Length: 415
Image (cartoon, rainbow, N blue to C red; front, side, top):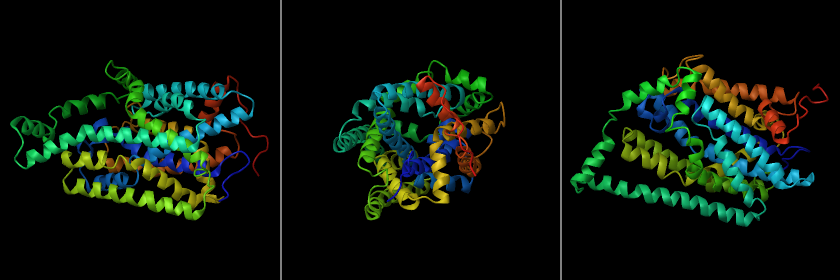
């Protein structure tokens, strides 16, 4: 499949563009309402049928997969940038580590100044570790990735399965009094929730209020602590991206038949499992004993599987030049700006300093911002990149990483 241009790889850009759009579909919830509602919907803004519909659609189609795909693409792009630097006569570390240091600065600013859901700081720190593996053959990268992801998921199951078995014993009337007490506490409404809601709303009353909340002693180290938590999974996904790049999978080098096989083998079971989990959660009225295992635990091993399936489907649909592919590609080429820009838009709409809608809209109502931001991404990205070499934040990142102001405007104006 033809998917390359002289200076860009179309498939990588298109997948990245679709992924950054998909991520905002979930992130908007974390920007619009209290943090706990992001993880457990009934905590806030979940009173209407359309709230449950939007949750179900995101749970089935988006949750976990698009973040995983973004991480996979980060690993692939890491090799691409290093290889081009080495071809230009530089050492790989001279290209890579300045980029990661600058990215870490962006991520910390994103977290402390704008939003708790930043992933850039984690990418930067994990990316510094991923560099150690970039020279490995695709076979060893794939095996190492699988080993890491298996370790992460087995650890999660080992920690949660005993609790699930305990809940089953209690429900069958066989649990001890202590077990019954623990399950009753788990199922009971959180008595602290009103206070948490009030504090959360106060922390979004203004940008200074958010800064004060994000630098509290119990919160300020979260970007760094994430490396020892979900950063392990991120490393596995980055190595998977390196393997997928070296194998030609992400560059569109495989046959259409091979991509269809990947779609069937990865995406079909992933969507089926997520659909079952969503339906089971709704039927159980989001009982935590049902909701958490089916939407957080059982589907977790399939996040990377579904991400690979989505990548294959996107390559099949947009692996050649077309008007639609060019728009998605532009979003992907400016993915850094689009990711940060979507947070800025969310801040303008929801924070008290500006729109003041934080905590005032439900889950479904918050999602109405998503198609608006998608349209902005698709329209501005192509228009901008027809005139300039990089997105605005890409240009800053590149200039700071190279300690030299990079040329921005294209020499030839578009006709």
